[in-house]
Image (cartoon, rainbow, N blue to C red):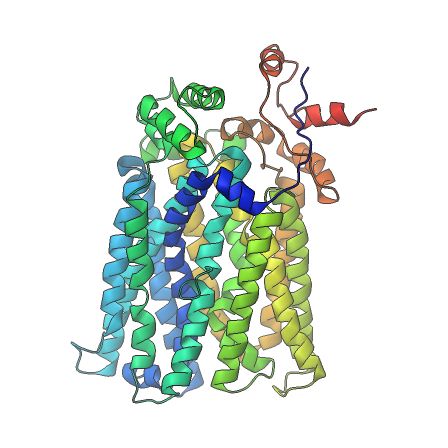
Length: 554
C-alpha cells in the first residue's frame, strides 16, 4: 500500500505563491469583501469619541447617554449585517457565489456614500443621526452578504492543501489588510492621522467624513477584481454544469482539464452531488436537522463564530481607545497611537499565522493554544484593573498594555484565522449556503451583544469585562479539545467521516496538539481500491489517521 504521508519539504511562501498564483489571486480578489468588515469595525471606534462627531449628531457629554447612543450606532450596522447574512442563504444558492459578492459590494457602496454627509439633508443633529444610522444599516447589509459568501467561495474553489491558508486570508483582510489604507489596522492609522491633521476640533466634521468616505475604496476594488474571476466550481456542479466546474478547477490549479488530480476531484464532486436534488432553504433546514450527527455538524459554523466573538476581540477593536485610556494611556492622540500600534501587531501576527500555522499545525491546535494565550491575557488585564484601576501610568500599567498586544498575537494564532476554514470545510456541500449564513448570523448576533454591552461594562466594571471574556475563551478551548476534530488536509467530500463519532475523533486528534501532524497527500489508486473494500475507510478513529498510525509503527 502506498503511503499517504508526504515527506516534509522546506516551505517557502514565495515559491508557494508562484506555484499557485491563480489560487492566491482568486482569494485576494474575493477577500476585498473582508475589508468592508474590517474598516467598519476599526473606523467607528476611533470616530465615536471625537468632539466633531459628538457635535454633528448631538451625542452630548453625559456618560450614560453617550454610551447608549454610541452603542446603538454600532449595533444598527450590525443588525444590517445580520439581515444580510440571512439573505445570503437564498442569494448565494440562487445566483451563485460570485454574483452575490457583486450584489453585496454594490449595496455596501451605496450605504457608504450615504454615511459621508448625513447632515446635508437634516435640520437637527438627531435627524442627522437617523440618516447616519440608515446609511450604516444599508452598508451593514452589504457587509453581511459578502461576509457570508467570501469564506464559502474561497473554500469551494481552493486546492485542499491551500484551503486553510486561502480561506484564512479573509481574516487578514477583514481585520488587518497589508495595504495600510484599509481594514482595522488602516482605519486606526487613518483616524490617528486625521486627528493629527484636524485636531479634536468640534467644528471640523471632515475628521469623520473622510474616514467614512474611504469605505468606498474596498467596494470598488472588490467589484473590479472579482470581475475577472470564475464562479465556484462546487456551485457550478450543483447546477449540473460539470464541464464548467472542471475548467475552473483546472484553471485555478494551473493545469489542463485532463490532469489526473482535476479528474479525481471532479469525480468526487460528481459523486457527492449526483442523485441529490437541489434543495430549497426549507428543505436544507430539514436535512440539517435530520439526525443528531448532521445537526451537530451543521452547527459547527454557529459555534465557531459565537466563540470567536465571545473571546472579546471585537470589544477591543471597537473600543480600543477607551481600553487604552483605562490602562493609563491618556489623551486622544496617545490612545489612537496605541491602537494603531495594536493594528500593526495584528498585521504581522496574522500573516505569520497564515504562513506558518493554519496548514502546518492544523485548525485544532491553533484554536486550543491560541485560545489559552488569549484567556491568560484577558484574565491578567482583568486582575490588573481590579488592583490598579486608578487610570495612572505605572510599571504595572505598561505591562498590562504589553499584555493587550500579547492578546492580539494569541488571537491571530488562535481564534482569528482558524475558524474561517474550519467552518467552511466542516459542513456538507449541499447545505453550505444555509449553514454559512447561520454561522455569520451567529457572528453578528454575538457581535451586537458584545458591542452593546462593552461600553456599559467598561463604564461600570472595567475589570469584570476582561474576566468574563477570559472565562468564555476557556470554554471555547474546552470545546475545541473535546468536540472538534482536526479538519485540515482532507478533501471536502471526505470530511463527513470525521463526524461519525465526534468525541472519540476529537480526543484522538488531540495528539496533534503537541506535535506537528505529517502532511497528507492524495491517495494512490491502490489506496482507493482498499478503501472500497472497507480496509481504508474513514470511520471514527479509523480515519485517514489510520494510515498515519501504520506509517509511524516500527
